[in-house]
Length: 72
Image (cartoon, rainbow, N blue to C red):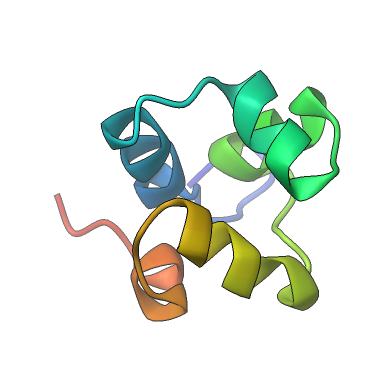
């Protein structure tokens, strides 16, 4: 949990790095600011529902995989 009490999207960062993408690159592909991707990864914000399919496609995963909590 982050300082605000929300769950971090650790899976998002893991998948982004697995696909050799920088935050700036992913942000550009989605039409959002790099700071937005950073906030998603740290749990200060979450992607809007309309961004999830594109995010999953770019990261070669399913929307469910993005939203699943990291059990590690």
